[in-house]
Image 1 (tube, rainbow, N blue to C red):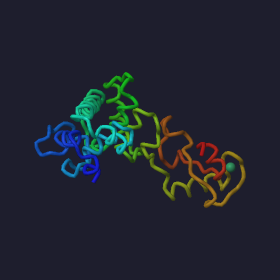
Image 2 (cartoon, rainbow, N blue to C red):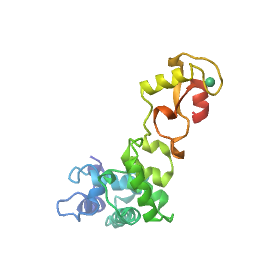
Image 3 (cartoon, rainbow, N blue to C red):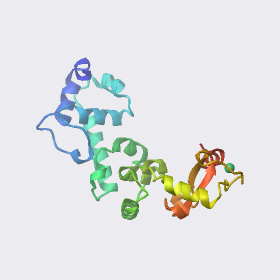
Length: 210
Ligand SMILES: [Zn+2]
């Protein structure tokens, strides 16, 4: 639909690169969706425009060609390949362009990154393996979706503490408490019964900064 609104030389050229059958097959293994439904094209424009697809298309509508977009897209793919030389299936469908926009000027030691990725891939508490790449670059743990404690682990910790919050020392009912990693995950603490402690809701929110 957008293609119709913004039809012209630019969009025809962009399709030649991103959606035609005889397009150059570059970076397919890093993209989700399909080329013939314009999803590759949409992804590339989304990345280069920082999510302002309409703005980018209307600005470029009358350009003679889509070289800027095509060169940008190849830079993203080359950067991914240089930064993370070992391909894994989890790399398909990551929003690489946004990571490229943010981190392209930073220097990384790819060998060190690979050691860290290998370790995280084997960590059973990391439930979102795809998020490892975003975590490595941004340092934000939310991308890993660290495994939570089971109901049994919570009950066991609750009984061990006799219902007393380890922070404020007040007794609560089980449903009024939340489980917390005594040793945080990033310091090597596992999601295990021994590392589970129960906090009252207020103390848990204070601790996690929510
Ligand atoms: Zn408390």
